[in-house]
Amino acid sequence: MEKDFLEHNNIIIEELNENKCLVKLTIKDESLNPYGIVHGGLIFSLGDTVMGYHAGIKGKNPVTLNASINFLKKGTGKYLIAESKLIKAGKTTCVLTSNIYNDSKKLIANMSATYFFMN
Image (tube, rainbow, N blue to C red; front, side, top):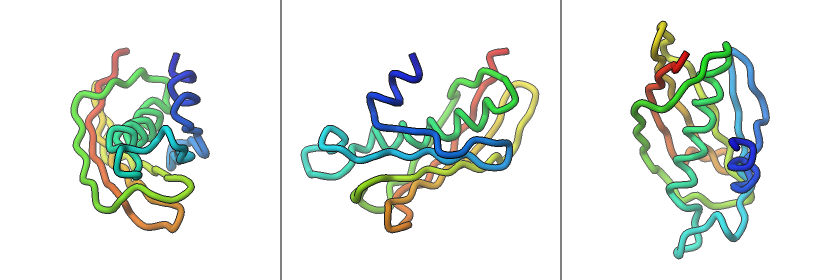
């Protein structure tokens, strides 16, 4: 199911390890809102995806408990890249941040989220 979501939204996992997670979104016409920029919900999904995969790196099953995003620039270009950083991991929750860049390496959004481990 998750793979279908990623494929449908042109998202691929570029790198995934304990220290770093990178996820790339190829921008297509269907990625855009009526103003011709990447839809904010898709940018949010990109950040949530990179942090969720990073949170689950040790075999735990994370679900988003809380998340916040700051949109800083328009989502334009050929692709967007999201990277995550683990801030704190506990027994039942963890906190991460994500920066999302365009293909010119300009920061377009940043996020923070808390994940709950279901197992």
